[in-house]
Image (cartoon, rainbow, N blue to C red):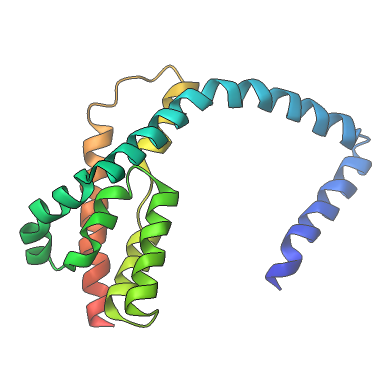
Length: 168
């Protein structure tokens, strides 16, 4: 059924636009033209986040941070193999998926660690990426409380995810 959702939406929108006598093609082109300046505005923020994440990983800082925080996360119930994932997730989605892939290959898809990694990825967000995109397009620039709260929610979500995976 899910394979038919997008075609159904496409046909429904096309029929709706015909009913309302809207030129679908020209409306689509206008939207595409508006997207180009948006991409140009957002690109420096995205590039900065990607470069920062690459530098963190290549320099080995994420591994050092994972070793440093290992006692805390282990006490909270997060396997030590997933600490780097928890630390990197707020910065990058693709880097997180690369770490998830490594975990799935090393431990197998049905292991406790792999299930935890999948749930952690599903219950968290790339906080810094989202805030970079958000602040590039809005007048809101003060995120003094939003980012720390989002980071705390990510850690709490990761701990709860591992707890639920242990119970189930």
